[in-house]
Every structure is written in C-alpha cells, then in structure tokens.
Amino acid sequence: MKKLALGAAMAMVAIAASLFIASPASADAGSQCGANRFCVYTNSNGGGAQYFWTDPHGCIPTQGQFNDSITSFSNHTGRALVMFKDGGCSGGAWFVGSAETTNHLEWTTFNDVASSFQIS
Image (cartoon, helix red, strand yellow):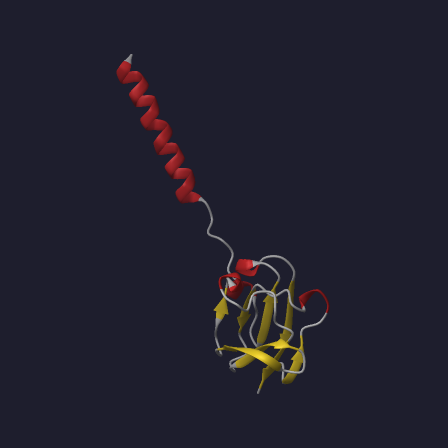
C-alpha cells in the first residue's frame, strides 16, 4: 500500500512538471511590434492597450490613454529615440536604443510617466 501511494505521488509530480514545462512563455513587447514602428503598451510584456507610430519623426506627444501610462515598449525604427516625462520633449529623459525592447518599465522610475518622445 505504501509503494502504491508513493507511486501515485510520483506520477502526480511528473504530470505537474510536464504541465509547467509545456506552458507557453509570457508575451514579449518586441514580438508584437512590426518593422519601422515604435510600439508602446499600458502593461508589462506588451500587454494591455497598444499604440504604435510608423516611421515617426520629430517630437511626438503620447496622447489619450497612453499619456503617462506606458509600461513596456519596443523600438523597431532602426533609430535611437528619447522618451520624456513632460510634453514638448522636455523634463526627465529615457534613452531608447535603435532596436530596444523593455518589458518592465515598472521596475524603473519611468513607468507611467512618459508624455512625449523625440526621434531623429
């Protein structure tokens, strides 16, 4: 009886482990953003609402629900950009590389504060 209970417990552990390993990975902001786009998301890992700019130039405001609400982003423009805490590309700045994806701005001081960005 003891061997049967031990065997059943081992089988349960094996089944639970296989379910965990087979689970899909979390989404990534970069995998959801097309070429020549700067994409922003209201939640981590590219979750929540999404907005993107295709081939953006100059100083661009983050408007509507995305103003002060960006938690993850992906830059597929091929150019570096700077996100700013204030409108008009002013205030505190966050440099974003030409092929950078950040899935967790909530781990920084820049979570939910971006109001504009500048790209050359």
